[in-house]
Image 1: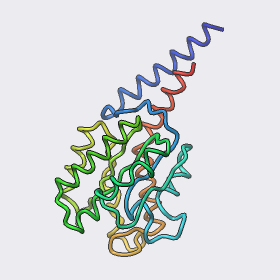
Image 2: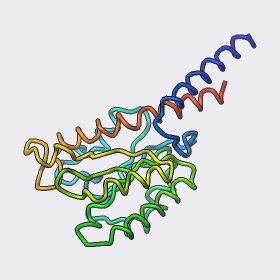
Image 3: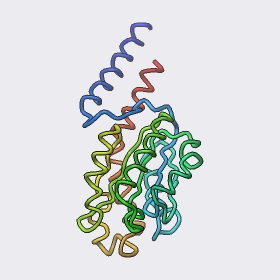
Image 4: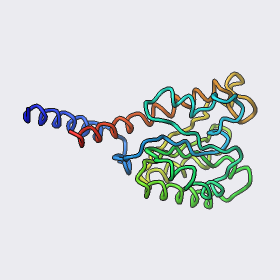
Length: 215
């Protein structure tokens, strides 16, 4: 019996090592003990332009086994997000927090460096809680190009997952959007699939680490 348990443990450890080797970068808190995926953002996360249930967190919840919480607020900036991070994120047992801000900062002419500092603070607080962080890039060919590399570098600096260009091909396609900027339900479903593809290897790695610890 002990031999069988040892073999199972070695099997899980080998899978974890394989996933670590395949990962593009080391992610902080890959061993997160939280329960929920929290989508923390502005109107893109809230689901502006779609009926209730047509937002991307709702679509993502159908793709993953972890509970998904929509903590998006229409019109939110990174500055306003900091004020609600405790109640909307830290107090909700986060496993992974998908952070999506920048659009309203840009529209309100908040200096990019201030946005990056706010994002850095948001990431630090979430990681201090023990959760993984994913940084979302909402730049497209037309808007927010200057944020793309800045968010990518920030994610690398902080050991966060980077999810690139979730709006690419959506805001130029009338069938996938509700107005000039916001997707419709079909567009949000595309976003959910893009996010799911990026975060799944890390969620799987987290699950295997938990299983290996329990055996």
